[in-house]
Length: 318
Image 1 (spheres, helix red, strand yellow):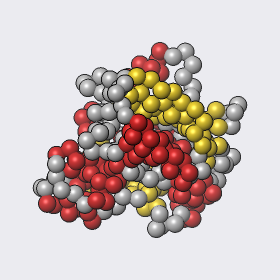
Image 2 (cartoon, one colour):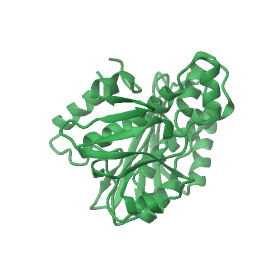
Image 3 (cartoon, one colour):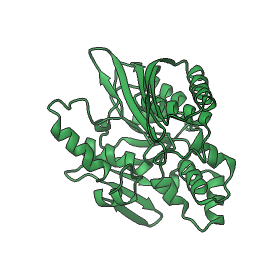
Image 4 (tube, one colour):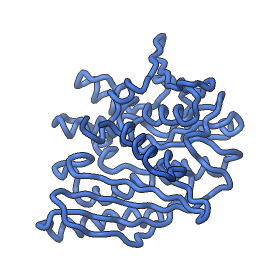
């Protein structure tokens, strides 16, 4: 089964699913945001390519990225680690040293967790953030005419992962983008300071098109973007050129860049720092069958649910 199908089953099965749909849940009665992510060995990472220290950092970074998309202030995390019984002391020390360093960088505290035995290493983190504005973010808040903006480069992490998996040479910037991502918390704070209404924001952890499609579906508005406006690192272009690969596939479909994609009204768009935010498209008309349109020079591709499932990162074996 694919992830979309499983999420539909969960939503239809639970009697109270009002909080489901976004990567972060805003708990109004507590005025906090909560998110939860899990990294599983040989699904999300390989111990042949990532060190225990970087695994610790990344396990926190991916959760802080969800809080960044909620435009809140990260405050606390709990960390649950499952591992084989023969795991050595050095692994545990290096893993938690990575967690400690990134938490100190972003003023986040570890307040608990769990330890269990397992055949493979699995890291599960719950992160809590404090509301930073009177307005909220959700996939459903995209409206006709809103500008679609993104932060940073796309495609770098998936190219780094491809290089590691296929034993290809790649610049260290691409490898580092995959192994040691940085959550876009600075850009998140800037967006939060400019809010005048609720807006749609996601991170691009499962790929740029995946995020845009989820926003389109939740808001019931189609979205059009120009792939040539999405920033790609020179190192990505060189890597793809050297290995006869299409860099646009990494840019559009590759995951784990942990950048932000936001749909913002015109007044907010005009106030954004164009060195940090790049406009790649617009939100279109309300649509009973919303989708994403990708412009590439004189061609336009319509992304349907079937195309999304066949191209996106797969968390499960079909």
